[in-house]
Length: 327
Length: 97
Image (tube, rainbow over all chains, first blue to last red; front, side):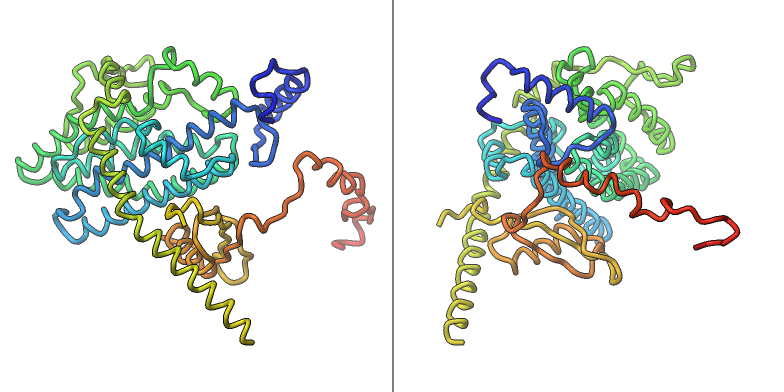
């Protein structure tokens, strides 16, 4: 297939692409060895690897609080959540590898600062309430996106998403529970919860990506049924679901223009600061450098474990060989 | 030997959720040998009691049928309706058969 990549599409390619579109339109799933357009494969590799990187980098803001969790109950929950995120990264790299890429190549791109991951993880977590806000809002936004992706046209990606969605539900509930305790606590605790909501609200809305009109790749992804809902649709869904949850907490969402629109049946909301989004995506967010440095350090410090595992595997193989010679 | 785990084989993981059911494919992972593949699979794929038994198989050991030959391979079964019970006419009076 690579040989035709840089040439004019042949009539055979056009025929195959039309057949592929027809197949996808019929709500059929694409599996690894099926023929697929080169651009479909490329889009998926980019999207799934960015998603995997987001899970891996997403461990860092929360890992910051594992050692300082206020109780054992909170600590085991946070540990389990961060461990899940490592697992989700692995499911996703595994799905990406079915498309013919190597996991190490993808990781090298991340460590070199060439790969993107969700911009939300470049914000800092200075207070315990941030653990609540991340679980409630960031995982809430991620779930909205991931529930949609359970129906994505690429089989291995869809299957990974089903598994991830089942596990994420606990992430959001534990976050909301933290917010609930703080907002029903002392005035200082409630202020802490409100402060976290103030800082995480807008970055959470940015997680859905640019407005549909500004998102040229989206239309193609929708045609291929990689995406099933547009950025703006998902963002609106998330807002409509989250506003009543904030009201229950007695916290206020930091948007003076937020109000229920009876005619639309949705909440109206104020403009998003896309300049901030662009800056964070471009690497100029508050923690971009810190996150990559932490990943590089973890990769370097894990080297001896990988070496030891290799040495152990070799020794075991030698022993087995010797034993069979004796026998 | 390069220390990175990209030299590690890819293993396909199959989990039996309970006795009485077959092992089912759940995904893949990297590991230097079978024993560590089982240990990794325990952590990656059974964090919530999803299984009571794990199989790991090197991906390279799996031979699969070619998707392009799907039609030739499976079409012969499509026109053999007489392999299905509904092909045979049995009067209602006979009852369930």
